[in-house]
Length: 170
Length: 396
Image 1 (cartoon, rainbow over the protein chains, first blue to last red):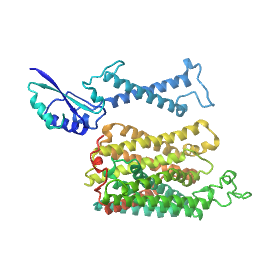
Image 2: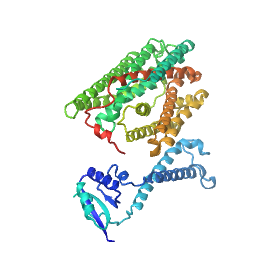
Image 3: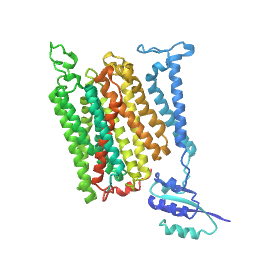
Image 4: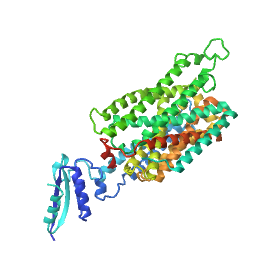
């Protein structure tokens, strides 16, 4: 069996979204869609699994929170073997919980920092966007104003072409 | 058209009866505590209804389309504003006539040198805190707020008939909304200073206006969300899709966090600086045994519960989950409203008990009755709004 890759190019995201729904209702596998901007509802229409980014964000946030807590505990309370805890403004500085309000901003910022940065890195890693990466899009117009749908067809591709034409792509 | 179901009517009327009975009992039993209870319950519902006006204005100036389907809900909620404002003005007038003693700085002789009541710090604030100016300010806020609410309601109905953008109702709405938001930015802060912060006359916080606004926003969004869910369950608002509910859930979550941010910023700076004239406010709330539990408990309800319950996407799309979270948030903010007033007026003999809860239930009944009645007056199906289709097909 010979396989062919069809590129269907659209110039409107609504038509693209409609075509994706039509093709999926005919149980045709869509390999990939390239778009210059995120299209609302496309991920659902393509039947993608829901992103797990939120879970990673939660985990990174927890790591950041614990890191911030440990950091501030080490700096302000314990020191090395309780050697140099800092006393600022005569606040009670022997236990963590008595100082807790003053530590909240640091722990909060660490949470945000870790969640934000590690999430971006995870996103790049998952999409293989390392430095020097080149685009995987087959057509540079998808970075401007065109939407591209990639379909792999086995055997006769005329039927597919007709179907796509009927759905206003060109 | 919305029709009040029999059970809703019975519920709201019986709540009003409970409220009336407990108010009468409260005023006979301890008038000072009863006035405090009245002012804090009224503040709570005033906040919800003025926020509904702000919400509609915000949608206008942002030219937002997502909320078109639900816009009858805030429009109905804002009809409670005249009642809440009327009670507030009544309380202010009563305070000026010395029928109640909510505002310590209104005591006779407190600003005259040589009087036994003389208080130097309060006398220093006479330029701002004097009876005439206080009354005039209160009336100005209330009149402008009610006028803007009325205008926005009328414009919305007019827009339903005309439709479209341009110089028609829609752009008139933007003008009114823009002026309202500018006025509200100042007046919400000033109302918070006048009606709430002046109770603890010696103390002041520059964050206070924002703190109160964030609370109004949290309870306002919560109420709008609850009414939307209620109406959909009753079979109205069939265009309301789960994405709009999701967006409202995000607002509730976001403003719960904003409220916590304000609450904590105010608390932490005062705790850190530890200056006697500032810490008195929190000393009363934390050290007195009758407020200590409520203080931490309300912060827990208002922050910890929404954070845990509303964080994930699925939970904001689950109506039952949202209803539980919203009711918890409303209770938490209701307790917090009590703590804004009671420690300053009642000091160490304030108790959040059945009288306060009864009066609160009475307000809930009145609030529900008035909003149900105004929901019946206009069709819940919006027509000819320029962003109606966008709202129907909202997708997040």
